[in-house]
Length: 531
Image (cartoon, rainbow, N blue to C red):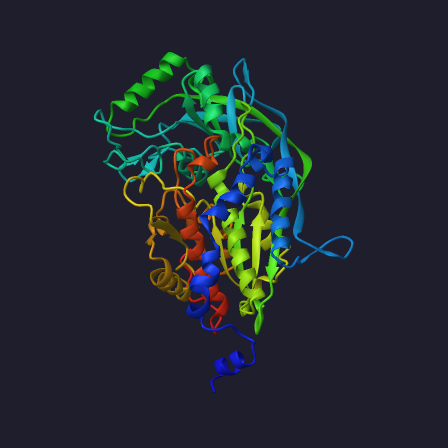
């Protein structure tokens, strides 16, 4: 007899995958049950599940209750020595202390005159020379920085990107926005400004004070960073560069000019196919103090112990937090982000629990990990992976992460609802990528879309969910994602817009893939690093 046959005879491993999983356990993952859970987690009384709030704690209790009901083991050691499902951790809210920007005789205040973003910390007033650097773009065919030294200066740039009279973008030559344009263009501009040595970056994102008020509402995700959360207390990044969204009026003051003169410079830029160097310059004095305020949050962990390979652990993860209540009082229910991933984890956990109860439990152990703090910078998964892994990372074979799997995105709308973006499957393990494709072909047959797996992806999706805190430790991952949509990070991300049959199919794909990883003879090999 082979070693596998001996283990089967001894009851130490499960029967072959296809004979037990396809119908009996995978089919317990249903659209009906996914909807049942999501109607709880995405309800108004969860108050948007923002990290550190009553709604987030209420959601954590619900998830823990479901894990207990399905017989998953608690494995977090509590202060009294007992085991629980909640992994508490402390966060430090980085509130602003004394914070202002002064230019000439004008003093500007955050969230009134400008929107700050980033990790700025200037405990004492600091003065910088300010210069106007067009759109702040650095490309071979369009370089605003050519011949300019901005090191140590505060630079003022325009939002979005230049285009021709017929609407084509000068950088890309098409109607599609490049990485410098659109609502997230500030990311590329801030990265480049830092590389160029700029001390501060001011982005002109609104023409008037009224337009700026609208911007505050529209960019609620960025607004949430105004009071930043961190896993570490005390000052961070002393003297580091900040990113500020400002009005044209404020930009004119920073450049010691009039709004009319600045407008002329902007018009000149718009009419030219190449960057136009500007002599607009001025000075700015700034202070941005920080004070800490403690807040508590928690991850929720449920554990299914394996059989003959129980010391090796597969993680199935999602984040259950969202962005809470908007400044105008609207609740961001986060039905898709990431209610859909969280309820998928609950259903996959139930399927494995039923298998174990039937004597068909996985060979490797499985940790079902739902984290908070994702919307604040992947903090819950960072706490688990970097500071307090309940299962040692060297015993963790892979992480399958599920984030936003209940909607058809703009790219596929009207074309297909039988797809899923698979991100990261080939980054660290060629075996994982092969398993993913073969499992899908055999059991689900969805279109596996690798658009966001491209290292040149301007959205940088690979780095924007909780799997990355495992991947950076060389643990193979797959990130399952259905893409962005117009309700992303808005109060309109509601349960009525969820496609539960799509979510069911996606969750079953994760289940089958998890089953194969948990039951194969050999641990996944780590044989590449394409991050």
